[in-house]
Image 1 (cartoon, rainbow, N blue to C red):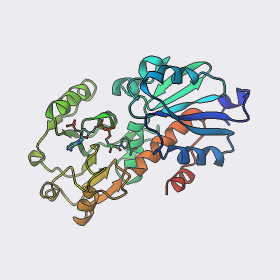
Image 2: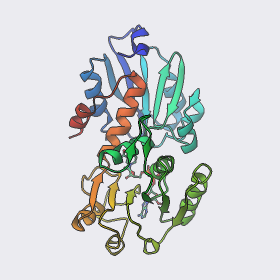
Image 3: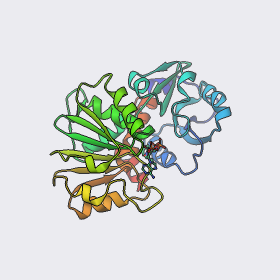
Image 4: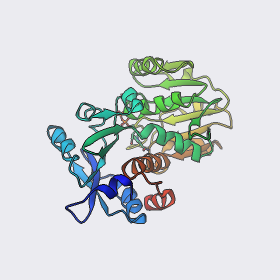
Amino acid sequence: MSKKGQQRSSTLPYLRVGLIGNPVAHSYSPRLQQAALDELNIPARYELWQTPTEQLLERVRSLCHKDCLGANVTIPHKEAVLPFLDKIDPLAERIGAVNTIVHDDDYLYGYNTDAPGLLHALLEHGIGSMDTHGHISLRGYTAILLGAGGAARGAAFGLAGAQVERLIILNRHLERAQLLATDIQQTYEGPVFSLSDPSFLIPHTSSIIINATSVGLHEDVSPLPAEVLAHFDADTFVYDMIYNPIQTHLLLQARTMGLRAANGLSMLLHQGALAFTLWTCRSAPIEVMRAALM
Ligand code: NDP
């Protein structure tokens, strides 16, 4: 148990942590997090806290209870929780979204583990390298980010922070891609391009294509035409943030062309592991968490 957790004298027989969102019933986080808590014998329960917008403030305040370790935050509250927190981590501040809240000593701290979760996932798939300080580098890679919504925003800041060689943002609505590109350029010195037409994509060696759109989630369609994907080099890595279905049309296209590809389960796993460590100050039992997702 963390120092934080040990110091707490719970009135309940267990501590609490949970997911704030609307809806939350579909989430994989309870099985992921409960497996980790149980593995390390931490007497805590991971709960689902379905929260309509009008109850968000009350829900966030309830995290200050001494039995509470904190929370995950999901759609649609990742941006709206920021003003309700005492301190925001600089990365979460830049992204403008919090997916993890830590309760410590009556203060609520906001973090974003989606962005580093993506980098850890890419590393696990053999993309990038980690230095002795735990910083992940994607130097030498060209990142092609599909989408400019919430998930893409986190990914873009993560990729820029990992010093990708260049970042190309492709989105259906060009102005959203341009807005995101402008935000990224405040802190990133590499070239950022925004596009809405995939046929203008110019293949580069060592490309990482990341789908952060919801295309492929409900229908068997791909966000990239096959003829565009076919132009990319054999060393291209295709990552789809979607994990349900486990094989999207994009992943099938990529694998059929012999490209390396992976779904978003690894990102889900790593964002959860990073959140677990923030709440408990313990290393997350990654393999136990991974098995819980299978
Ligand atoms: P948003 O609603 O914020 O963004 C949706 C994005 O998809 C926008 O860029 C939007 O483009 C694009 N889009 C939607 N429909 C179409 C379409 N028919 N054609 C082209 N583009 C389209 O969603 P999120 O960013 O929150 O989530 C995106 C995906 O990422 C989801 O599938 C989600 O499940 C996944 N995700 C996975 C995570 C993980 O841990 N693996 C974590 C978070 C998200 P436009 O701007 O033009 O409307």
